[in-house]
Amino acid sequence: MISQLLQGSRMDLFKDELQINGFPQEDSFLLNSSAEITDITGEIAEWLSVGNFQHDAIITANDEVAGAVITVLVKNGIKVPEDVAVIGFNDSMFSKHFIPPIASVNRRDNELAAMTVEMLMERLKNPELPPRSKSLAMEFVKRESAG
Image (spheres, helix red, strand yellow):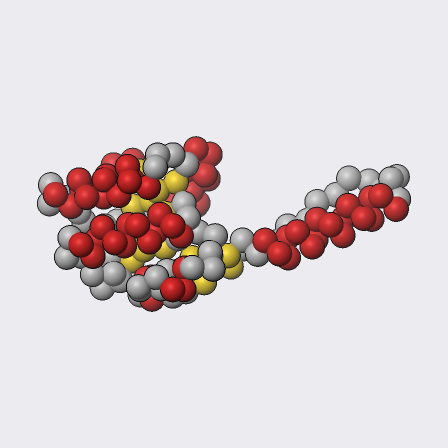
């Protein structure tokens, strides 16, 4: 089972991707949280205290939450990644310095910003250009927390 900590519409998108890829999306394993990190880690601690923790992975909304979740898991005798994988999001500059280093998703912000500036400059030079869009795929950065 996969636990996931996300906010708002990101949760809906995540559920859609689970369904598209054939994964179960039981709400009892999805913690939708816009709360403080202490509230999120409290939820994880509660799952552990009732002995009903049967998760293979926890996917978080960002690397800071992933680090906090890892801390709670380790304090409760859960080994990361041996017992449960933990994955963050944003690939923060600190994610590789956690113990274990956090697997994450890199949004490629610098490349996205450069692409946006390029499109804006083209529009300023030629306001008659038709509207257009570009996309840039994110990258999974595999590190020890994912096994």
